[in-house]
Length: 412
Image 1 (tube, rainbow, N blue to C red):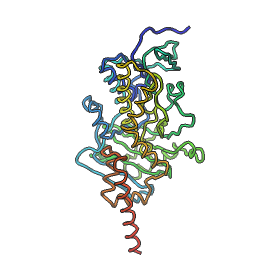
Image 2 (cartoon, rainbow, N blue to C red; image 1 turned 45 degrees about the vertical axis):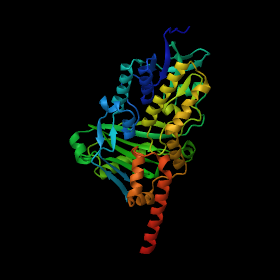
Image 3 (cartoon, rainbow, N blue to C red; image 1 turned 180 degrees about the vertical axis):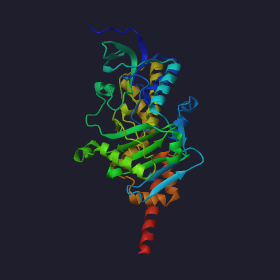
Image 4 (cartoon, one colour; image 1 turned 45 degrees about the horizontal axis):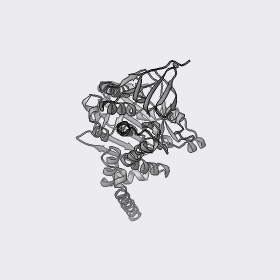
């Protein structure tokens, strides 16, 4: 027999990453009884480069106020596959913020707890059942919890999405391998520079993706991310560990890493490449990676995770206030996130499907045209919405493209 849990909550949130913790914080602040669960023991690490765009900090200022930022970067360099061309940006103000996911995620959990959330780690959810008057989740220790609503924020392989039938059978996902290395400030100053430059190498070993070097306060994150669909991956499998080894040596050759740094044991992870068709059901909403919310070009997911968590909290608060728990009422969640950030994801998705990766010629063109480079960097760092400036960007790129052709024709 299953052990019965008599505690009832307004909302149970499965997954204590940025999406789940954010939803918990905003619901708890409104006075609702919230349970936050995670299968891992906290604090725990997470496969992620750990870079935050400033739109994250603008929307969630408490991240800085609570001291969750490790450091800021003031410079960024993107390299073409051959290293012949590079796009450099350097400013007096920071262009991005860096976090250690182990510290960052646990910090968000503690903020949720301080707001009134009940947090329990090392509890794996195995099933969910929806009744007329409640939702029930079953755990791996034969206990269960009951609540009015459930938020699935349990990652790309979400149990909540699977058990409710919201997950898609043929989901596309990207892959990454990475490691975060302890490194002294002196070594970072010598190799990365005092501006703590981020380095992005596009198309390493011809993968559809990139390699990254993200400097933290006393760490450096180095990784390879392949943003190729499952169909394309099955046609040509990539040994990402071997690509990582080649990339690691390339960084040493170019003095971006100290020679005595060793690769060590690599970590890996998967990331969604497009949102699910449906992210709501009776008494259930999906947030973050569970809903497939990510930038399919850059792999950025924290902004969409936290934003979807906040939106979900608002929708569930309205549902609790009005007593409406049905699917039709909760469908407004999908309408809101689509209006909020879905249009940008759709534009990035179109770009990725057409394989508009930044190759040699593309990087050369944007490097030679300051207006284009400013727009693209503004999109990457969260200052602009790609949906809002898409026609301006396309027209400027066409202008720069034909200008480049004209110059080359005249030279010949």
